[in-house]
Image (cartoon, rainbow, N blue to C red; front, side):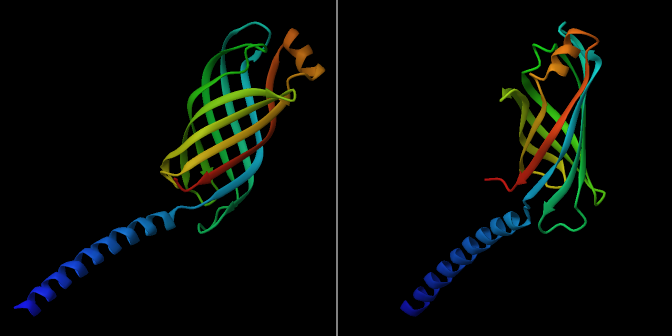
Length: 184
């Protein structure tokens, strides 16, 4: 009888150990499917009507071309494009701000991702810096965290200031990076 009890306890311990290992491996395998993506490129914000010193509602179109992209474990991705559009109440003096937004990323392998983020902007060394922090809410890399950082046209450039006082600024552009990482 003691032998059976010992086996029974051993079997229960083995069962619990197996379940624990299965749960741990499932979590590991799900994390192993997550990828790290790093892309660099250029981004343009276009304003319609043009951005001036007068605050008003503008249609803002955000487009980016990302190349190269470094992606480990997913074949066929070496570049991407991003696009988003929205309406904002802006002027040259009221350009800084932020809020929630979504953009679509089209990967070079034909797949896409939806990047849902909160944007913030600041003036750093005279440049317009936009930081987008959020996650991939749909498509390729769903559930992973993402950060985009763009450094756009210098806000203190004479051309920018002159255009703001005159016919307006139709667009600003500059460098951008996108990083997608497994969730913490």
